[in-house]
Length: 426
Image (cartoon, rainbow, N blue to C red; front, side):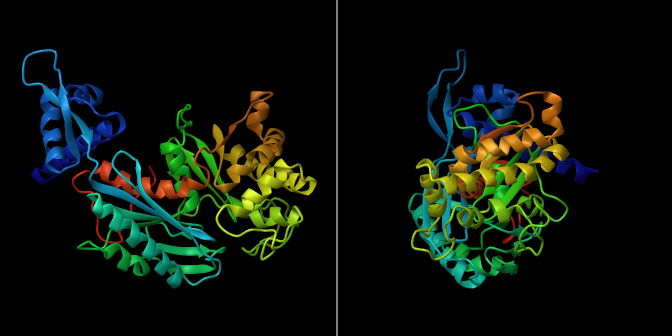
């Protein structure tokens, strides 16, 4: 009974430390009385929590704040510009990227490189990514920042609770454990390997929308479907503010939902999958462009989407038709998701967000025609179709912020065993 009571007290203290740090990170600088008021604790209860976070270097005093009464004025508090940082990385079909954010959520370092990763073995890709990680972590050290962990976004299925990519068809990977290949990079400048999480890029894009996507506008509702479309098409479902992962962590494979069952054979082995109509390569073909190796089709991250956007803006008839058909196919696939889950919004993210002006109209028409919720709500009913403000940056930012949240969730004990995946469901 005593042990249980001790565990409860430690749990309460850990949660309250997290509440203080999150509050200051979101709204600081704040005085101690202001923190107490915001989180619903007494000033006496907040004081030792603040002192502990100050000693740990997570909070700093920024000045004096009047108390309006007797006693010593309390200094205003802000999160430190130094200390732990959230490290995120992205492995794309044609690029690699690394990003680090500080406790305020500000991007403090970012590097990216073009990389022909399609059908490359994992080892050389991870070596190139390790070099980018070493570059970023060296820069962080010069600014007094230390990575608290690493989250890697990948375009494929990741086994729940593991660092193994079960299948990434556009990379050509099967059963690839990323932990051994990244151990050297995460050891650079550190006594032990950093905690590592590997996650599907569409899932991280959805979490980025949930955490960051509103910008200056109204926040997203807590129930939405996020579509991440570029070379492939992935999706993620957020229900009541939590990521729906599925039994094995594979939820969201929208690109392999059959749209036209007698259609062309897909890489997954099925026929008529959404990716065969709305994936980047399919849209290029439908627009009269060879998807691979043609001089008129540029390489590099976002380059082919940019080409399609330019051709559509110039009124190219074949491109406009291809984008309308892609939007219709997306709408057909999403209609089943909307009928089943009744989300309040559908968010078009990833690089495909740059094609939204030409894709969304036909997508919305199919949703209106095919969903019961739209019929129940009348004209203009059904879920809102929104365009991501983060676009192609979503998965990378989601990865960095996922790592950061491990610190905010448990400020003084955020380090977990090396290569221990975190729970990103919240």
